[in-house]
Length: 277
Length: 299
Image (cartoon, rainbow over the protein chains, first blue to last red):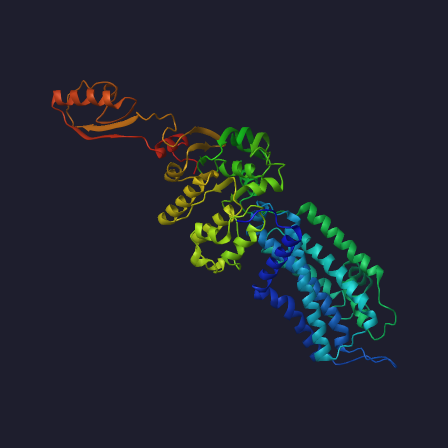
């Protein structure tokens, strides 16, 4: 028989481990988060073989351009998509309602969700960079690693917050993947993830600059670019990402619901009876 | 001291009143059943008591606290088995129980919980492999893992086969013997009859009757239903209260069956009349329930 509250750090740790277990036991999520972005790296290396060379510098290989971009994309989808879809489904299945009927403080549950997603985003990033290094001769510039790590830290935190907002905005678990893909993929195309847009239309560039993904991708690319000579700290990009993160957090604090919006809840009842009278 | 007191509770969704002013008290250690058809307001009431829903008006006290504003300490003292709530199907039974146990300061030992709900053989099975009844027992396990002083059970056996229901009843009986206060909702009369110390019937957002399962609807222990048929052409002049009825079938609820039966059978033997199909029965909880809730027309 045991007595006494479990300490907060232990509870947070247990929740992270719990979310992690769920992730690894859902192979389809693990595939799309970890393997799918790697397939792009392999594919782009097969499709394009046109390194740009500048006298006296390392060549800008395909891997040198794409590995950091795809690492940012993988980290964004590991947080944004996984949290958004996962929590919308957990809400549909009334797992969140069950959690709310326990004494577990809601923020500890969310810390587990976010902590686990960030951990998996880091695994996805390290995996992408490692495959880049070992399979495609990716160069790592040690003096720019601090900037890369800082960018990664701000990026995953911001996209995790946006993932909570995605769960808040998605009416059901079925619609969440659609909302995730309809937002992340088009934005990826205008954020230098898949194609370096050499001469974009002004409105396209504005759109790319407006959304947070490009501000995740470009500083990471800079940290791996042979043409960059400074330490690659990009304060402006970090501020844009952080602003989106704060916005996402504010939105989810205001609108996140622990109960399904369409099933069994008060709203349905009101709608049904409203229609009947 | 009451574990739950409710006075003048109402809850509206838009212009629809789901709960229309109820008063209730549940004592510590009592098993209290809330009966009623779907849509009567049972789940809304229970979810207000659990702190899941806000109320529109009225006073509510659960374990001395207002559930609308009560926090972590309150939830540490209650156990909740919702009518429908999911669980992570990729976790095993044991992992789920461990995960939820860690949230409570007073914990029942994991193995003991698994044993109480009879899932020892499934302890390491993923929840996705369990049957509906087994999952409902995991629900129960998660509800009692924190040694609740007060347990809410919202339709705990809906969808169970008779043997699974019987097992759950045994489990609830065991919890009662440990002194746990239990508020359960059900629409099975036999369940209420078997488990509850007291019952209240809800219909259309109101409590229409309250009492012990045996006396609900102001049935006294002496009350009985007397029924019989008379063959065509039987003599007239039946004693009261049958004299006022047209026949040939008679069914009357009487307060003093001994005296009434004596009068009836004396009349029959004197006149040489046979009382076909004569029965004396006690109105069941179900009879009272159907009468109170309007013959189930709310279903």
